[in-house]
Length: 282
Ligand SMILES: NC(=O)c1ccc[n+]([C@@H]2O[C@H](COP(=O)([O-])OP(=O)(O)OC[C@H]3O[C@@H](n4cnc5c(N)ncnc54)[C@H](O)[C@@H]3O)[C@@H](O)[C@H]2O)c1
Image 1 (cartoon, rainbow, N blue to C red):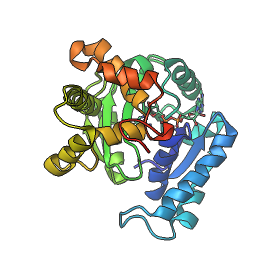
Image 2 (image 1 turned 180 degrees about the horizontal axis):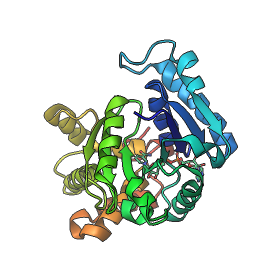
Image 3 (image 1 turned 60 degrees about the vertical axis):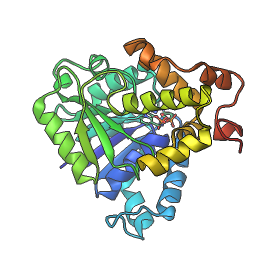
Image 4 (image 1 turned 90 degrees about the horizontal axis):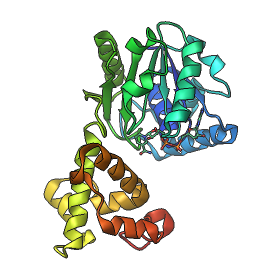
């Protein structure tokens, strides 16, 4: 069990990753390069706790008890006593590399460094830290919203030690998550599954086989999914799905080639819920 956790990046993912560790009783340090976003992350976490998290572990008085366990830090220098640091900054290899180089200088030799990247190779990211640290470098791919989604894909790099995989899997279980070990391949496991389905769903619409609404109904009522693929694309922005599919296509070829209608929609600004129009009109 780890006592002191560090999280770098207080955005959508990082702030809730900090929260799930704090909910499980860990002392957490949370850093963001933008101090304004760091403050905003606390407001976001208050809202998440107010809405309630449907697990026994999380008491009603969580705001008073849990949030004080999260210390906001404006510098990574405060991370020297961390046992585990999870990075959740922008999905940009250069930005992440700079964070890892700095962390490697600051944290103790025992500290494990994990990345929440969704598309960059863990082995590539691990090459930014010293050779000895690479045994203690790993991927921990959480899912959004982190306070609700139980899965964590745990991804060892080429040099990750077997005992570190075990330690990280065990810590994930301790904080109420269900980890699965996945090889360091592009898209890991879940994004490959998800986008194969999204592409086929889009093809069905292009062929006029069924409407987006009806395919969403089919997935909810026929397959037991909590949300259909078109609702999901609208909620998370269609441009993000397109970007992931382009990465998967570059790695695996035409089976992940984004459908033309997605490019047309993104080009026209029909990007989903936030832009008022996507597969659905809001
Ligand atoms: N959004 C998702 O559904 C999702 C799911 C799984 C994994 N991921 C991955 O998690 C990571 C974070 O995604 P997000 O959606 O939370 O992004 P986000 O844009 O909401 O948050 C990123 C945060 O990192 C901060 N940041 C940038 N550079 C920094 C630096 N050098 N030091 C400290 N903070 C820095 C930014 O200010 C921002 O607050 C990405 O790698 C993404 O691919 C995202």
